[in-house]
Image (cartoon, rainbow, N blue to C red; front, side, top):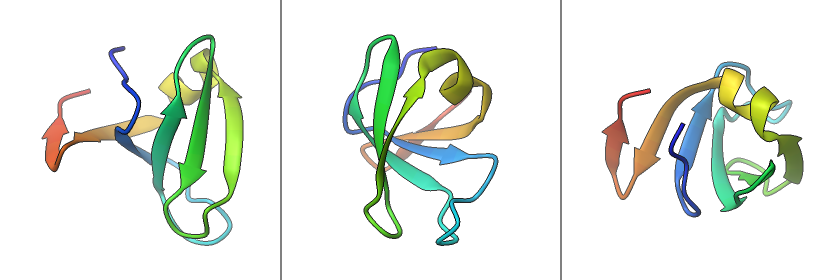
Amino acid sequence: MDIHVNDVLKMKKAHPCGSQEWLVLRVGMDFKMRCQGCGHEVMLPRSKAEKNIRKVFREGAPVQV
């Protein structure tokens, strides 16, 4: 899957704050992401993150997943 820094990912499950959208801060074997709702930052293994992505937004235009 082609994910870049500054992409916004809509995930299958919501964060406890209620937001499903995450900003990608770092890409590699792990993704570092920031919740768009509360600002909480997490690092997830690439395999787990890619499995839970529903939609990718790149500069306002959604990308097919």
